[in-house]
Image 1: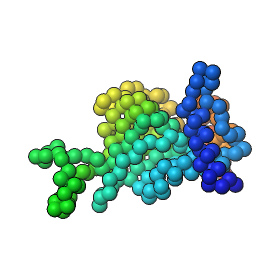
Image 2 (image 1 turned 90 degrees about the vertical axis):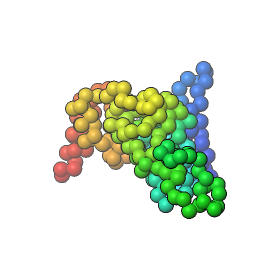
Image 3 (image 1 turned 60 degrees about the horizontal axis):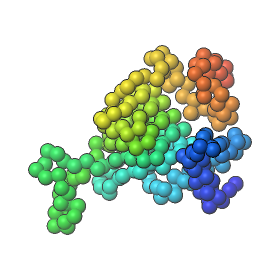
Image 4 (image 1 turned 180 degrees about the horizontal axis):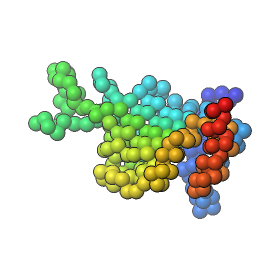
Length: 235
């Protein structure tokens, strides 16, 4: 097993390979083989720990990469931010927790934050609830995710989007404010993908199925699930 320093260094190297492209090196190179998945998992976890300092209000699933800015202000109702497994988060993404200002008050300025005499005024700033991001979600560069939002499994958030409302699973959303652009798949395929929940499979099955996951041959993927995953659960 690697020491913590080596894990952090590996995590940084992985991020450089994911986010640094040149004309001579147009595509990121794999950082590890499938035989070293535990090291990859540990390296990404170490990077998250280095960034967020073990904040109990922030939970990030295995193999998710990218280090978004997460703004959570101390309060009695500070929301949680939960991000699932295998998510791809680009640079510049920001999660805004309890950062809302009361537009129905006569002033939006947080006097209670800056003046001790008025520190007893509560509820400003505030949040609208937890932020929940599902599994296998891609959030593109410079997107903003507001409090109280749930982004479903397999969703895609376009670059520069301002997400103020829930995004259904396997839906592409974009714009300011973000709205659904289109479904990635038919309703029937979406339901089957959610049933398969490939991100919850054992590691060896996930990475055996990588050629199927990185393709658009749904029938082949579903056949694999039926034979290797679903049938084994019945036994």
